[in-house]
Image (cartoon, rainbow, N blue to C red; front, side, top):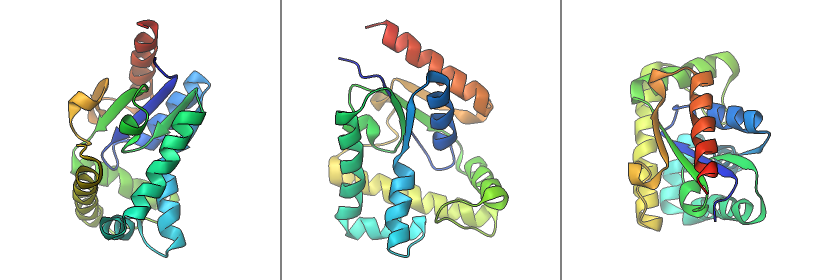
Length: 188
């Protein structure tokens, strides 16, 4: 049975959080961010997001705590949008979206956001530094989730919608996701 849940995954900087917030607003749903939850765990340990990822390679409890949070809200709630690398796996009856973006463009977006408003537990002095950190983070996450759960975050077969966000602005991405979700629900 399909859940009224949109699980948005994607590469760092692809627009997961912004898209998830926009889709939640459009649908009148609640929004959750496992990235914010993960960053908070790192912040409590005095770590940057990159350091938290590297620490999580050795301390499985960081991922287990984050994924436990995802499973719990997936079981207890409905009518929400979550941006999360692994929600597609933990909330299997959700509408699953993967947002893709070339790493250099993603780094430019993240750097602009850091310059504009900051980003919880993430810094960077240049686009190149952000890009290098993002590639390291992506590799760490890929390795961790493959080892922990046997899942490949970037496999299009895991998702109902695989979308390159470089081709559309944020409002268009929100509309594409919301429209695809409504069609998916209607096909019950």
